[in-house]
Image (tube, rainbow, N blue to C red):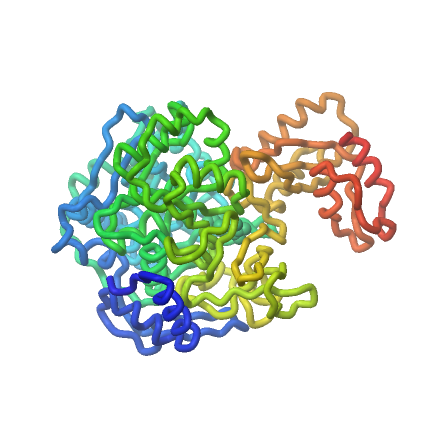
Length: 631
Ligand code: PRX
């Protein structure tokens, strides 16, 4: 690859060129890939209409670039290492040749089941190799994959399946997570009661649990794969053909299906993977995320494979069978780049250091974090105990919407400043907006983080709702992409992301919109209304605090709390359960009826000192009552 940033001068020159001559910059990078037809234009960008096109007119196939292109030189090199949940079970090393064979067979199975270009396929699988095969097979035949994290409940699953009218669901009989076995197929059966669009369900056998198979709808994958041909020629698709939909939370109950397209996403994830992780040939790279999230899409599957890398997939959890599991895997496969979430670091830092010291970790060269701000203490623990004070930490800031990493240190190039994501990558122009909505030109400022110009992997729309896409990201600051995050720029121009400034709360690295949780609670027959806020938690980063107003007083409040959390589990998933629930006589509201979350946040944090002026509230007396209720 000729797009490696090797030193500070390289970075400065790349950045300068990317700003002054954006199209030429990306065109040079795109030359590193196989295109079946060249582009007419490099980019067309309309920030007002939120309309973006990259490499328009060109044709390619992203899986050809991920797999076929490497076969001649790297056919026998490991593409994917699969480490199962149980350490005593056998790991798999899947070569590029084997990956090719599996993806071709899977593509033929999908075609045989009637899946065509543009059809949506929901994938609800644990972290097993079939998940990667299915994602890549969809991309190979032009079907749009919609991976739904296998921790979501049946309600969340059916909402996502219906939103995109998925024609097929791919799931497994069950999944292993630590010492638990989860009945995935049962959850799918429940979800599909409400999904008339689904014609077929493919079932991967993982746990061999007894499941119900519905005739003519459900099919075990194994016999289909065994019968399928391993010959499949990658089709040519337009650069702007949809690649996948991935849902993220928003400020209304309806999840937002972010749509990513092919060519721009391909070159951006490849370029950023290579440079942010300073990937060298033969390195073993491990990202601990789930492919159900954008991190897994871009930096377990696409980015690494586009670079011909060896990427590790882990089925289990960091705490099982004990808190040394991650470090055991690092030594076992001599992992060179390790990428995880601050919440995992905080959880593991609480355990005995013996779990770390049992392992050498000497193979590690670069360690990274993603998904939420990392606190200084966790950063220092990671640096000292995992990086052994020699591995640069890449604190990578980005979003489902951005497709790839936008702000991150580059190893051995950017300064190491704890808790700072530091520099924008080439092609990215971050700006901070001040209180009056203008760009701050100074350093040493805080503001709302926006991006000035589009980059190749920016989401193209919200599936089925372009208006919502425009309103959410492009109207707060006309002409800019608004991230929903706040940030600080220090005196040397380095960025530190401080957290969300909207109704999204990040709990253990998962984005949770307050609206869908409130909607779930409000469905309880005794609940009149509710409001959710976040409060600091030493492992999860934030935990959820729910204020709930009842229609009438109820005696057994403990039971009611359990029922509320049960409802949330059913509607969204266990990740959205509330840590604390307080029953309140009312919720503080403005005269226009808007809930004053700022005050509720302060009470949840235990900060009773300064609520600001509450005299203009519709019901100021309720603040005192809530405060007293908490104490
Ligand atoms: O608030 C930011 C936070 O995660 C949000 C995006 O969440 P999601 O779409 O689920 O994607 C997560 C994985 C890319 C952002 O708006 N976030 C992500 N990375 C960082 C971060 N906050 C601080 N520092 C980071 N490195």
